[in-house]
Amino acid sequence: MAPKQQKLSRALKAKLKETRVARLATLDTKRGPHVIPFCFAYDGKVFYTPIDRKPKRVAPQRLTRLQNIRKSPHVAILIDQYDEDWARLWYILVRGTAKIIPASARRERGRAIRLLKAKYPQYAGGMLADDAMVIRITPQKITSWGQIE
Image (cartoon, rainbow, N blue to C red; front, side, top):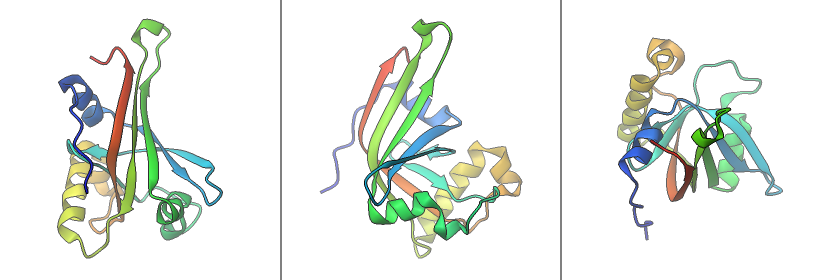
């Protein structure tokens, strides 16, 4: 059974769509955290993040985040803002499940890539292949704190 879609405020949805970078936490084989910064697109229901053409130290299929997701789909996303004026601090924590979208799901992958290219000029400028690997993150729970306007 799919999780019930959480009711989110308009301001929270706007932050989820407009934020440029967040942190993605996956679990390694010993259930320890692995956290990286990442780019994403949020369509109002799920998050998409690609394996782009930025230089990597290993082959894309061997990236730690992909290996971790294959072993355990449980992930967290942290989107936040720090400010020296602590009255302006805020964060959004998304807990969910991740899945690597299979190549056979061309329609969904194509839609995800279009969303990502629309949000990031770097992707539209060639940093994201039309057949790029894409991860879908389905939120299970979204919590927030602070002044999200």
